[in-house]
Image (cartoon, rainbow, N blue to C red; front, side):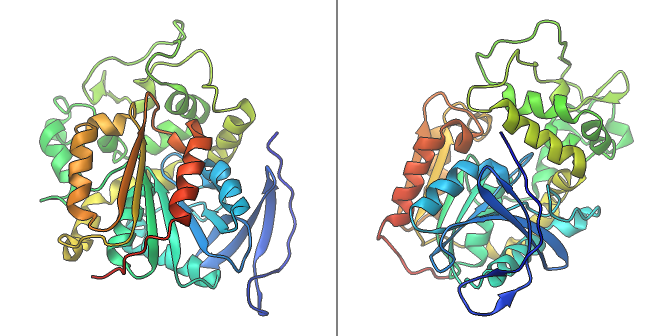
Length: 372
């Protein structure tokens, strides 16, 4: 069962200096801490030898540090310091309401500030979903900080000729433009830009998380629960969200225990979805911010992991197209593995196999000097 204990203390890191850090709980034998960095409070899970090499985990949407619970324990047992923060906008971290506070340079500052707090100048960076996208960008922006990177689900294929939102609007229409309201097609990233999206998720936390996490191809569907099948963004005047368009399964998948699902519901009920949705509102700003690294390549070792049944794989053109795109930019030691018939939540669905791949990758001796 997911358990939390509360206490306030100071912890010692690998120096003799005392660092003001609040211990805010223990969940499944993983200690949680909170500290103030880059203008926000950040909660993070921390397990392992504080003098050892840091492995830093970055989660996506709608996730928490908790999505890495299996990897945190495995990596710590292997002799490393495993740290996984609630990214800004999530869980026990601060939730700035303004989406401008979620650009890649602010996230970059959060990550570097957390590393400074932990007294680490370099680390292995691991990311999933939005966390994978962040990991790719951090590797491009700070090649001498991240000795190895592992990304899951979301590939990298370059910066693109225009911002992601601009590109999506050219295909699906702009739901924010009154003139296109009746014709705009549904695309979840564009829906997440609508002002009403936050309230829709906040009012349906359990149902939204249940459908997003539990649905997979071939699962048994609850026939009593209807879903929206119209491909328009607005149906009868309502911008129907993604979770209402996903069938509701009869049961949670085997990899997600009821008490684990309840922890997600508890945390998102407290925090709400505004912070997480804000990441979907800055892609065009990020495109402007990252134009100077558009032609950079990666020379540190890279590992990519994904489920072959992940929606992102099909959206990206399939495994071969994803691999070809990543090979253009990964010029060092590059490995990828697709888990057959597995879905998007790969680090939870295939925890043991992912742990083994990650351990092998971290321990490998291949190192290629990073360079701009």
